[in-house]
Length: 120
Picture 1 (tube, helix red, strand yellow):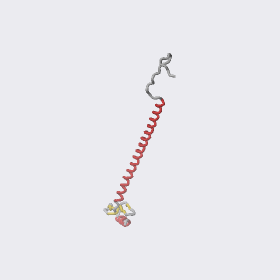
Picture 2: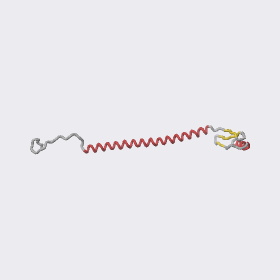
Picture 3: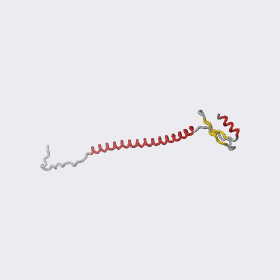
Picture 4: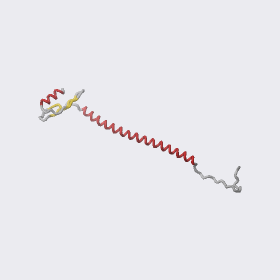
């Protein structure tokens, strides 16, 4: 039955103002929260990966520096002659393909001769 605007005791129908229903607002906020959580997770994952990468780079740099020092030392393996207090020469460092040897400074000529003969 249609309402008659002219009928006594009947209030005229007013048009509703434009807007959103509670259900539409709840759905929109839920979607916004979901997108926010996904973005935060991706951002947090990226930050953690960057921190782990920095730690790995620092460790790799330290290993590289140590390896470079060792490589330089091994490449320079040659018999190194030094002088003792009596101004006598002796072999301080002797390198061979299979081994290397370092000796302290001998005090006398006899010790220098024994070091030289043992490294041959």
